[in-house]
Amino acid sequence: MEVITKPVGASIDAMAEQVFAESIALLGGLRKLVDYRNLTWLPSLAEAAYVVVLKNEAMKSYAEIARELGITEQTARSIATAKEERVEAYLTGGVEKPKEHIAGGLAKLAYRKLKQEGRLGEEVRLAQREAEVLGIDWAVHVLAKIKGLDFPAEREQLAERLRGLVIKGKRAEEILAELEYPVKTPAELLHKLRERL
Image (tube, rainbow, N blue to C red):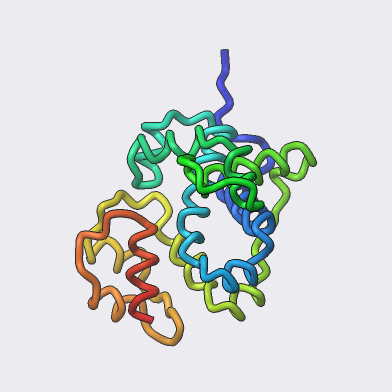
């Protein structure tokens, strides 16, 4: 019996980007994240979008997802098993913060909506202009360049992946020289980079 691990006509990256964008839309858009000072959610949402797509579309195990994304198996499991209903109730103000993985529940809500509407797999990208205006387009580029990198990561590994990238007028290599290593996760990398900008 043949096992299909990748959907026909759509890449995992494109679907994860689509789930990421839909998650942001469910929150009320990028402007809402800025208004609530929740830009720190972006790395977690990106990670959760990948976990949900890899689990549901590529049928990967928690161990495979963890290796591919540089996270722990427990993190992958927490994201994939988050109760969407509890997260949705929390986000709409109905209940206090649940023990669920918030980004995981949100990504699962976005994934489910896209599947139900038959839109998953369409090529959808964040509006470049909106991301640039909000000053977060660099984070999307960094995440794309480090995809598949094993974490924790050292300066040399990150410099190789981010070579040539300019973040808010500074070369990535210059910013990386200011960081402490090892960097444990992609989310920590984005946080450390943001602190230096």
